[in-house]
Image 1: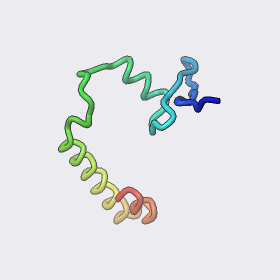
Image 2: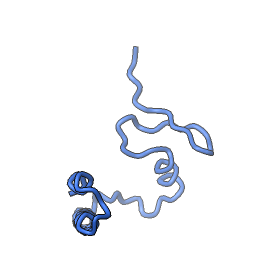
Image 3: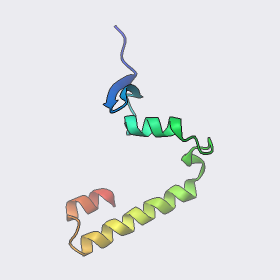
Image 4: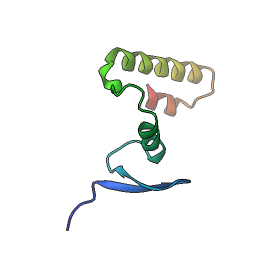
Length: 78
């Protein structure tokens, strides 16, 4: 018996196999196939990733302070 390395996902265009450990689904799979912008992965830009994370953190804290985001959810993001 072999272990599946993919999971099957379905959208309006049909079924596709997505890597079993992927945090993304069929829509992201199709987007990466249909729009290969540079071929350079985002991991090549660690400062950009840090900046995006800082923006998400600031947004979560601001929305929590305004009462628009539950403290439990804000803590999960931060």
